[in-house]
Length: 476
Image 1 (cartoon, rainbow, N blue to C red):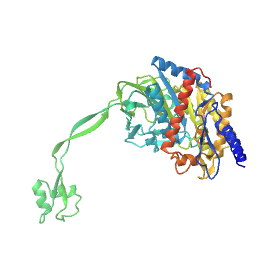
Image 2: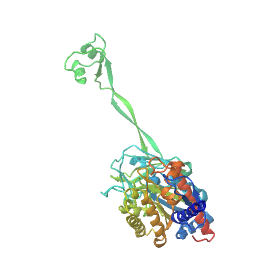
Image 3: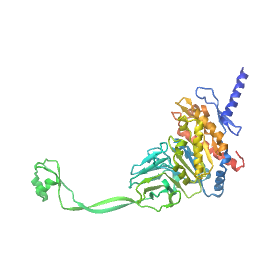
Image 4: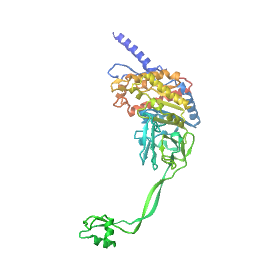
């Protein structure tokens, strides 16, 4: 009987490896943490990039930059809420820049002005409020572009302060991305205080003392009773001690009025953006209105330094799906401004909670890829499968399993690479395991900060492993 149980255990293990691993490696790690009220065995496959040969052009440029210590390598990571928060992507950015050099912070957006969350690396503030609109909403003509969030105002006296908090991301160049590349903004690094002197009527007041009359007060200041009554809107001569009266006078006094004025800097332009280049490294800069413009819309900013290396830009919108990006053509038009050498896509969780069938999900994914090609963005694409999650905190999300399977099946025919996050985090029954390790939030959909950072570490590890294989001539 013991031998029979062992035989069935081995059959289950082989089946699990076939179902979840889908890997070219013979190495698998078996995680023994119990799943959701089941005895399922959770198999964690070797962490690698599937169909990594499609990333060859990216690896070639990366290798050239590394050997010659020159050039920028632009990676653009697009997704939903976990990408907007920049927790996962900040880890990848730091890992790759530590290996290949820090070319700059990359794409940033003033999420706080749109009343939502963003990266901790920079802070934005403005003296005026801004209107905003997300790509998850229907198209009604708002300027929704590269950031996935439209941001605009008609105020002509605004200033946006951009303050880079992470000292690693001091910048020499700032690029401004606007609808149709319109010249809407000036930039300034400092303001000057202008003091204006003027003469204004002297203000005199008198506090009424007990026993004083209107006539006595008027005589004291050399004015008539009628002048005093008119200046204070008095209908009669009745006044009360302790009250204050204005005393009319023809005397003038000097008054200093000071105001701050930003000093605009020279902004240049090309076909994709307007930009300012500084000889010194900056950590703070201001966006101010172009005085010749009456309406202002901002789709994003790009910060670069003068060093060779990786620029890792992240673009995410809370609640976003492939279909949300697909319905805004301006997004794909402006994506060219980031000059990507590789695009990473992390979308799917929100589709699962819409109960979108896998075939329709793949239609939207493929449409996204076609939209890239229509803009001549013929660069390698790496797709991350959605992570495991639960419906109503107790039912396994089988839609995520289905999406992951179809993404992996399509990799060869559609010509993209895949990182299987779904399997790396335990697959269909991995949520309890992840929660027990402190990697998930209470809703069993979102992950904790530690969870997103682990995702970032694993993707970095898989990319670096694929790059090492490329340099060794190993095709995978």
